[in-house]
Length: 357
Image 1 (cartoon, rainbow, N blue to C red):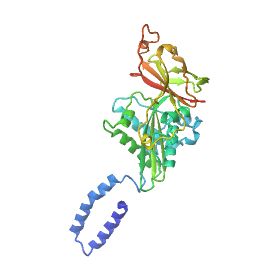
Image 2: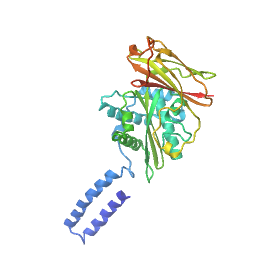
Image 3: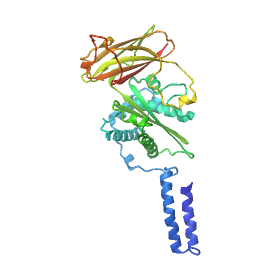
Image 4: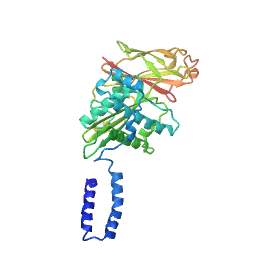
């Protein structure tokens, strides 16, 4: 409101200056108002006027990504149009610039991750909440896996709520997204989890999502670790056996290392203190672990068949994390003695969700 009342104040002062205020006094008044105007510009981020960004006049999104977006059948209700996809490409460039400062490799845009991120953001603005957990207790890896994602992912979330309606132009939306990303990067240790996620060297792709409704805006950066090509239909053979087939993308650099299966319940109701906290990357209930010497893995081609066997759990989800490790020749596929295995210094590359009957 201050932005709209100050011009009126200046008009009133100017009218009175003709009879009651000397010219020098009026100039002093204007001089004293300048700091106020400057502070309003900084502290009131574009609430009542549209932002103009000349960079939006030029489309920079690669056409092959536009085609991929048009062809992808999964989550079509949360697909972006070409213009929105272009501002996400520009946002990805900002993310990569943040990583470049730390000599980290640039990320590629993942279309499915964009849609999964859109889906959660839309759910949050429609139901007016803000959490890594969905209302039915699903974590980010559940939402990703249940909608066709097979890689390991991590999620950063930002919320913006105003007292007046948000503006919905592409320029304003890009501004809101950039504000969220800057908040992440401005974090200081030890409370810098979002910043660390952006600067994680294991990430290869990112999905960007947002939703805006009235006075609420949600923004998501979904980071993907893609080192495997996994068959999209893991076979479930009762009782308690899952077979996952796939391939390591760079078998000369990475070797299949470890698989761990966890159990999650369905449709759980979470207390508020849990909903508003960071989410764990797996549950406390471990079903099984498959060490390197039990993996059916071809070190030359990178092809693998991964049998996961577990007992004692019926309805729910099995979440299978699959790890790869650099220097394949040092992985103990045929150990000559007892070897202790830890996921430390390895990369969580697969995140497969299987719904248990």
